[in-house]
Length: 219
Image (tube, rainbow, N blue to C red; front, side, top):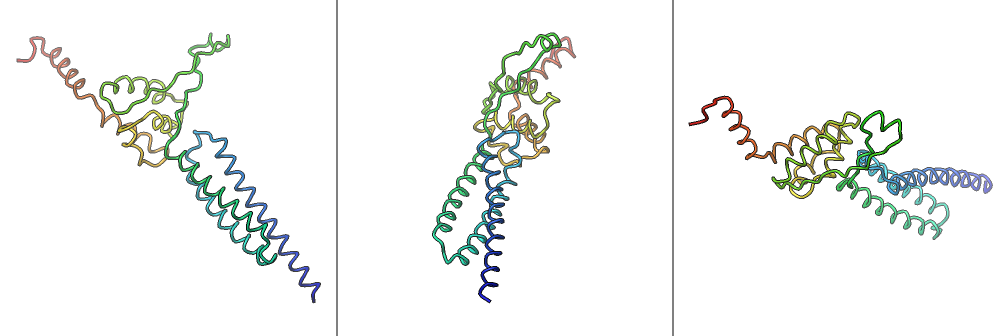
């Protein structure tokens, strides 16, 4: 009878240790994602945070079961505290990456076939920043449109990350509530264009059109 009990306990311990190893390995994958963060994968952050919470719940259950089988082994308690610390650190780090995407540089651009064949590489271009200042609006619009908006090699989710990285201050606050999704880019771009449209420039254009439509000018 005692032998059967020991065998059952040994089998339970083996199962729990295997499950624990799987959970720890999964948490390590999330830690690697955080430490080697690629801004183009920011859309994965909410799902990894959700996964992290579930893994920690499972780990807590496994550690409790191990405690009951090992009579509160202090090593288990120490390990639990260690993973709780890691849990909070990863959540904080990933959350900060989601809320404030870092600035990103465009890949090196090659102008023509001759540059490509000769291996000449043009310098990297820093994306323009825009904080809502009307004086900077036209320059930001033209540069961002040329570098990102009209770039067919970029997906909408990539364009959204580039846009969020460029916006500061009032401009950033306008789009910060939008979800990180491919459908959000068109909405964000239109919000920025509409909100910071240069009214003076628009009036000048209208006057120019009217004056050229009516050669004698406007009375």
